[in-house]
Length: 112
Image (tube, rainbow, N blue to C red; front, side, top):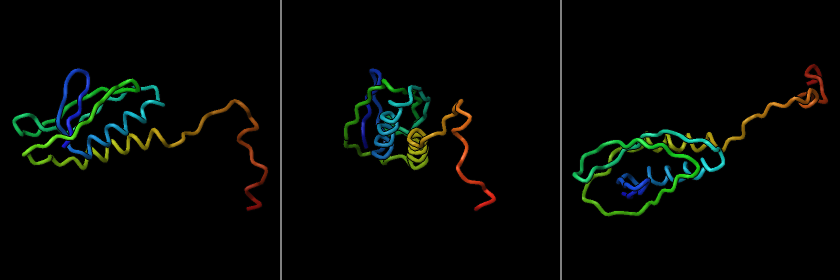
């Protein structure tokens, strides 16, 4: 498990969520936008809970490994969501252009 420190507080979550969260925040750096996310955490009494975060390009998170006697919550869905969000920021998106010749090809589809 890892303890994430963020905005004056901290929470305990699985290694996978912590790693995926840090990669997502790093990917947000080039997007210039913020995102609201929800991830599974473990409260100090061992009960599972969720934390809601608004993170953006300037978010500063610290992740530290922490030993605990508690069982890690199932975080597969949260990791998949974070990884999908991260991947969506890395995939090149088409950019519209005002150049009318930019979209034309040097071949005719009938020739294919």
